[in-house]
Image (cartoon, rainbow, N blue to C red; front, side):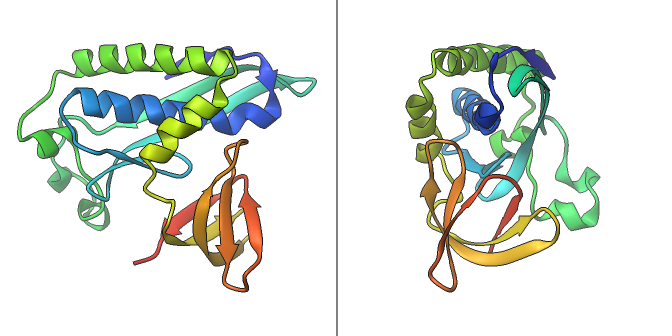
Length: 189
């Protein structure tokens, strides 16, 4: 977990999750994982299997984020056979992808270096640079998904992209375009 003090408006909170996803993906690239992808809003995938999840919680005052606790969980040296049966086919670990164990302390060091780089972009309001890096690694753009929004508002849609605020832009089955600010999206096969 990291405590990040961005001192920005509440509307920029989604960017923190996106920026962290880019830092994790770059970390995985650095350790030898080819083409890790980011599934909006907070999962990192290798070959379509989840290897990392990101959670953020903010403390705000007067619509300004004072600090954010960012939790990053990367499956490093586990065997997926240790996971519950229902997760074994949809998750992976760095060890399984590389075929060997990886030094967790070195991984943390690399991640913190990547997070520092991306947080500098964030603090200098270079959001488009973050989005460019995110879009390059997107697993979600161009896919049909089930969007699960709060209060049981679910619908199927095609993902067109991500906007400058970090919202997912989708085209619903009826042809309407909608921004998804929060929720979950499940890629349909």
